[in-house]
Length: 508
Image (tube, rainbow, N blue to C red):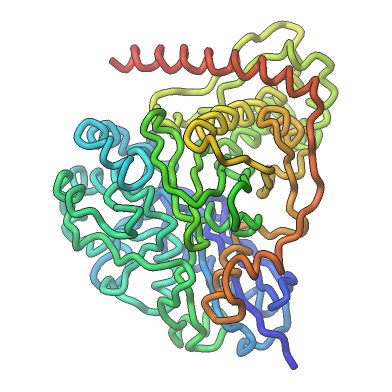
């Protein structure tokens, strides 16, 4: 008997990745196509949604061909994608705007406007303060591109857009799944519904907001023309999928309380898992989003492009004046490991693109405390530390919101998980074990798990997580290292506050 298969696709910032899994969780094939980010001006970061759709089709087709499985064996497809950006679609379901990326900062003025008008209510209802996410972006299109806004029938995200295109759906079937709602600015997240009061406050046409669905819900079947492009059978079910971070959390097995997740990818994401929604009204730092697993929530925060800092450092600092690629990330890790006096190293503020959690759009990155004795190893180690020290702030805020919930461990996924030094630093700052996931394919695996549940292969997400997710190397920092980073954490917070106040004064 031929084992059934599912496909998960992740539409990420760097590219789209499809993975074909057997019912038992074995990766049978994987394929990647790079993104095409368009940056025509200051603060502008866009993508062509149709190019994203092409990469989805190409990667699925490659997986089916490489695996050798029959297209009829693939019982469902799940797609996850970038979460905080938006795509405006017309009545026919085709895009009338580019993908307004989560990295695009043009909507900064509307973040401030939303905050003034009803920021407290947005946070309390949706679970996340206005930031570079859906609400301010929708308002930017409404006020800055009025003609285009009038032609928009609905706003969706890249994963939803690709799923709609695979199934040939028009705007009447536009959807957003529950894992995105905290970024919406206009939702009552507890009820998984749009908040009419918030829509009225910001004069947003309620009809331009899509229907809300659950991640494992089947939203349609692959249309014949798209089936040919994907080398799948027409009629193959497509589930709603979820946001890429929610998919990454799921792929780490965060299907019960107390499990934390570190997504060491383009964005550096820290998340916990709870059974209660609580808005971070005091600090406005943690967003509280619905987990893909029904009944669970992920309070989390992230550094805008935190993982991009490593590649930026390698390219612009370490390799400046050298042959391209002369200094690799692996070599930089070795340099950082050899630093004998890390407590005397500089501190690095990782917000090169502005701080998102909490919103401080004009804050920028910096090294503090540089000395002539500092080497590339010191500088790179500080870049790694910057992410961990920011995570420490998130962890402390979480502890204040959920004082009775003990955090057991933090599971790490993404390209940065292979750095043993980075994992040790994170363990020291967070005072908990950092656990790698063995043979994880990251977000596409979470999307595939949803496809399996939607197709009826599995009872629920905890069941498939227990079957598919395997833990790997466990990192635990020693007491001395933990004490050192407790001290550096205090200095980091003070410096961050000083820099933030300085940028605010310049802005005013």
